[in-house]
Every structure is written in C-alpha cells, then in structure tokens.
Length: 115
Length: 109
Image 1 (cartoon, chains in turn orange, cyan):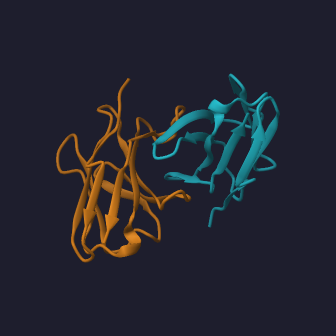
Image 2: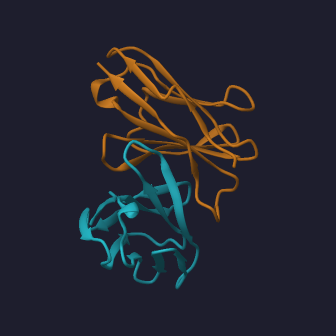
C-alpha cells in the first residue's frame, strides 16, 4: 500500500537553529498538508499546499515557517529559528483530490525536540 | 473559526461494554472523518462520512453523521482491549481538515 514517508523520525535541535522536515507524499497525490501534535494533545493544522502554492495556513504558521516542493517528490517544512514551544510531532499528509473519499494519508511523523 | 468538540476526552471502559463518542462541529460541512492513533504512532483513517445520514461500520465500531445537527458519533460495541487508542474526529473545511481534541479510550479486562 502506498505510504507517505517522513524523515527524519526524530530530530533534536538547539533553540534558534533552522530545521527542515522532509516528506515524500504518495506519488499521484496533488494536495499536501502539515499538521503538528504537541505530545499527546490535539492535532493542529499548519498549512495546506496545492499547485505549488499555499492554499490555507493557520495562525500557528507564522513567518518562521515555510513550505516548499523543491522537486517532483519532496515536500518540506522549514522552521527558521526554532523555539522551545516548537517541540512537537509533525505529521505530513497527502490526498489525491481536494475532497477525498478516503481521508488524508498521514506519514509516521517527525518528532522535533528543541533544547 | 471552526470548532470541533469531542466528548468525552477520556474514556475508561470494561471489555464487553458499549459506549458512544460524540463529535460536534460549528460549521456547515458534509464530510467528516474518524481517525485512530496508537501511542507514538501516526493517524490511521477509520471512517469517511460523506453525507447526511451516512453510517459506516467496521467490526465493533460504527460511525454516523447528522449534518443538520452538526454531530457525528462513534459507537463502540462489546469493547475489547485492542480498541484502546485515541480516536479523533476531523471535519472537512474549504481547504483542509480540522481535528477534535481526541478521545483517549482505555478498555480494561
């Protein structure tokens, strides 16, 4: 079964450093998303992306965050200057169509720890 | 702003018992999703409800959607330990999906 692949699975970074989280969505999917989940808590929407541009972003997705699809397969989330409160599990998701009949397919996540 | 409220947030039940998890949302939407998350794991799609009155069943879980009441339910029948997990409902908006806070279910022998 096709999967959404995320790397790394765990990243530890110092406060103020830049991090890039990487995702390889399912190959025929066109819509891409980032969500985050602070340990054991709510799954929060960050950003949606389609046709090489952001479709929607939440209030969490401020100027410190950016997304990119640098080639035909990767979808990245960059945090420019990490804060302690950025520590969370970050999930990438993709879907074939906007109004999916199957739900989004989520990756296994990247646990980001900011120290 | 869209609000998605689940209750209860924590549910401890004995094996063999039945229970219902509720998901209320604040905006018009015809699409609602239920996901399961095991500790430290990703989100697994359980049900996709696409219209008013939709009902889906898989094993001991049954989900329904009432778009007029803006309410979805996830009913657990004769719970077993393997159902212990966190269950999230998520509502489709114009551009993405927004999640409820999750219901952490523990099924005890």
